[in-house]
Amino acid sequence: MSATSPSETKFWVICRDDNPLAYQLAKTINDWQISGVRARVGHQMPLGVSDAIAQADSVIFVTTRETSGSHVSVMPVSSTSANTMSKAVQSPVSFLNTLRKRYGRIPQAWWLQLPTIESAQSGVKTVPAEYILSKAVSKIEVFVRNHYIRHQAFQADCVASAEVNSVEPVSMAA
Image (tube, rainbow, N blue to C red):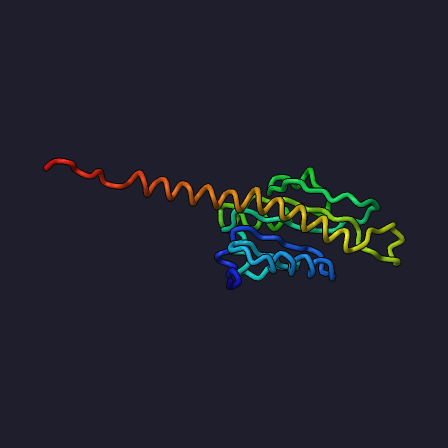
């Protein structure tokens, strides 16, 4: 299966931290090779990718947090949630605001917050990277199944139903 181009991507996973875990998470998601699903690492998005994200149905922003514990949290994010979000998510909110101003729309968005990665320098009790990766992949897989694949199946059913309903009746007159 060929890779999905940015313009064909309808479900984005944006790993905002530039670290080995983020690259492994993005690689894992891209290795699924699900049409319309793509992951990328980075704070700055090239204009073409930003354009594609604006036209997407969904986006998940992935970051780490600087607190102890092993909980992986997921919360919805919108361009209007800046007042209720911590400074760590201001960047995704700002990105969504930019998309709304430029395109008049934004995708449905979530923020996936991961525990701190192993680091002796930070002095924070950390969680093994393998555990974090496993939890993150699991959460994202649920989102892809529930918000993307189900939506795609629904759209396919609607198209099939419309095709069946648009068939011309056959005249039985002889």
